[in-house]
Length: 462
Image 1: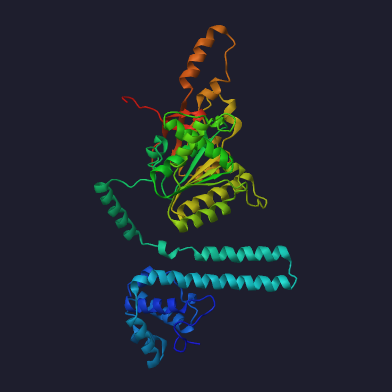
Image 2: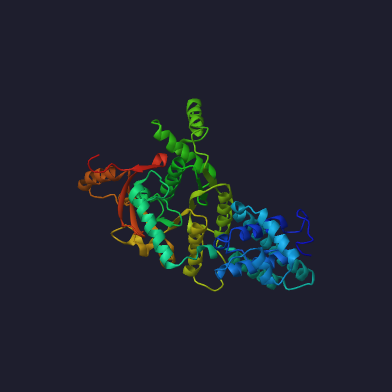
């Protein structure tokens, strides 16, 4: 069957002939679309004639020749009837919709490939094939499809054009200021990293009780308040209710009459407190999205984030935390290699979804045996893989945690110790150990632990 005999609206399984017709007409009408549509292969067309027309047209355009009904029919060795069909397509062309129609054609082709693999699987399964080999082969085939579906062609650019694009961006920045990532209201992210930047993997790491979950939750909540885009928090460490209690506690503190999150239960809250919290609940941003699935893998995160991206942009993705995520099969590899696969996958997700992934991580116990407890990059568990993939690494550090556990036995030193504990009680230092294209350093935050609230410490002169 060719397009010459196929009705325009004929239903075809896993194909959209109308989209194929419109796409071919748009290309013949506007040859400049060839560069933009280079990712559309001739094999994606269901109709054989249109597939050959597309291949011939792209070949002509790549050589710098004009692709129109006359030149394409001549290249194909076809006759006048086919020339008339192509002329009608050009007359009805809608080049403004070419990208939309191209995506429809490509998606239909992918669905045909998926259906083909599924048919092969069904046939092999019914023939009594070895289940393990069948699954392994299916995994390989689907992995190939995923790789082929990646829009690599649209990312190819010659170096001269690339540097000119960069210089154009620099010129715009000189007038408008440099574009920044999503803001959080916290200096350690907003100033140090220039916000939560799309394509970045930011690691927030620390020992237990250093406040890494509190820092991440405060940043996520602050980000959701400052953007209309979605902010996602994958809470593997903490149940949804715990997060809700901490969010409401923070908001009550910011409103001037704080309720500690540990007091948020029916036994201790009176009616007025509950009414006040319910009023605050109406101010929680609806773009702050929580996922407290008890099993969390990189693939799960990827599917959820890409699904959310279909609704609209995702400003940031927070994951709490790396070491308790579900891990891929080690297949004889060491721990560092497995962790490296996970961080690499999350870094790729950040670029694919055009979002910032903030990944929480534990650090080694070795820091506890040092006199100086401040963490270093080498303290990261499986540090090589994490450090390599991360665009930035932040260590929240609370000196008071160690002070409180070093109470002096000598009476004469107790007053100085108590004074130092009081001085450091709410202090959290966020140590930026790595910042790609930025400077490392320390940012001082104020941590109201009972309300799970973090804010910037006053700077000199404030």
